[in-house]
Length: 344
Image (tube, rainbow, N blue to C red; front, side, top):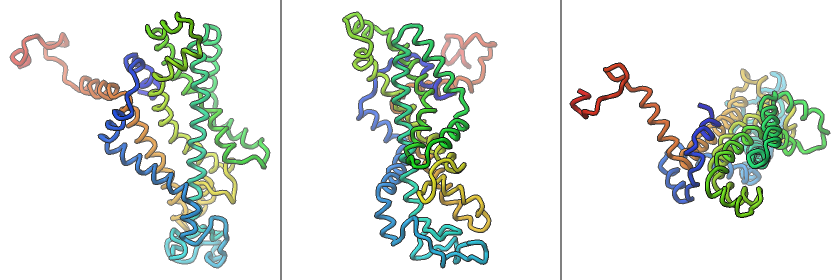
């Protein structure tokens, strides 16, 4: 079952009120995977925020070349074990340039997390506005926006992103450009979720009463619909974050994202692929950071979905038990109403 089906396919989940903050937090605390994913993400955010301090504590920066630490005779392979790991360079140095890997990793966390979070905000804002407009508007507006959303979902996003990144002037800030391109091309799923939820909610009595009382469409959206839309939108946003981390890394890996000397994990992988045999650490470190970040976002996103709508998880577990249960011995008419004796 897809994410959108989980969020829009159940009318009970669509109309359930948003849980209070304390109740949601209590449900999250009951899930070890959520706590682990959240703790890792908090640590990554702290690392990104304190990148200048961490690099200064090591005594290095992400742009200084150390030619003496690479062996030019062998093509630039770092001297020393494990890619040049030492007391001065905690994770070694970059092949060919000798730039410090620890400094580049912590500074790269700033770009990768900022782009992924910023792109998610753009996707949610555009999707929320257009989804509400489609759900509350007249039939013509709904059809136009619904078909536009379908077109956006069908677009080859990677191809269009590469084209847009290639034609923008080089002086435009690349992290901001990545944020806008990923966000402007990826709002279709959010708009579809919001439209489906809006169509379910606007037929309820309290929404109809507000409209009959003279409230305009946007007042109804702000006062009546947005509180109930918070749960599915937050859930979908949490699931968008890991895909945006991968999108930023993929665009930087293809050479149309962040450009040197600015560091990002995807940009580091661009040159790391030529060194995977001579210096495996250079490939392993940014790949591991991307994997950990994506996994943490995915774990937390799934936990947020369950915490905001615990009945969805209960229904899934119940449905799984029913599908896995053995058929009744009488050929499918169901168990007779005789309790234990009939079942025996």
